[in-house]
Amino acid sequence: MRQYLRKTLLIASALCLCILLIGIISAADDGTYGAYPGSPTPATGQQTVGQTTVVQQSVTSVQTGKPVIQLGSVGRASNTVSSTITATYTTQAPAATQQRVLLPYSVQTDPPKAVYYSGTFMPWTAFSQSFSANSPALWVASSQGWSWDARCPVGGWIQNLMYVPYTGTMKLYEFYPDGSIKLYSYGFATPGYKYIWFYADTPGRHITLFTIFDKPSNYITIDVF
Image 1 (cartoon, rainbow, N blue to C red):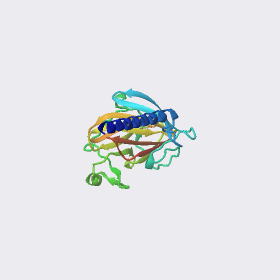
Image 2 (image 1 turned 60 degrees about the vertical axis):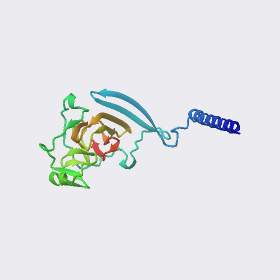
Image 3 (image 1 turned 90 degrees about the vertical axis):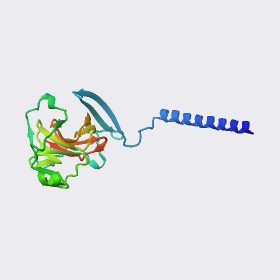
């Protein structure tokens, strides 16, 4: 009786293993993985600038072959210039050592006059007292203070300000008007206020956000004209 049960279990185990192998081989051969209607097809190139890894990713639609950008609730990049807030920019490029690098920002010595928070611009004092400081946050320097959107002419350099709530792996995503994406990997970032230099190299709407330990910040839009 025991030998019969043992043989039955061995046969059942072998049958299950065969079914599993057949399923894996079939999934690999039929080419259907990721081929659902409208799924994006990325093509990437990677380079390293200093300690920052830059990955340029062009995303195209399987259905149309045209560039697309999928940000979920974040929105969609476009060529429409709609912001009425002017960015605080300079046409003089920062030093090469400060480009594509995460830099510390001292709010004690140079606080903004206002910060966009909870749907409105708040004076720095009021903002600093109400800001929870437990989530990543991102702004663009503008004539009204730290804003979520601004406009800037081609060739301008703008400070993108951010708050990092805790130490973790940081990545920044810049979505271009043509649907291409640049991913900047900054490695481990420490808590506090930081900034990076944004270069307005292409006309149209640019959307930027960053993640810390894969937790996303809000997104900002910069309309380049």
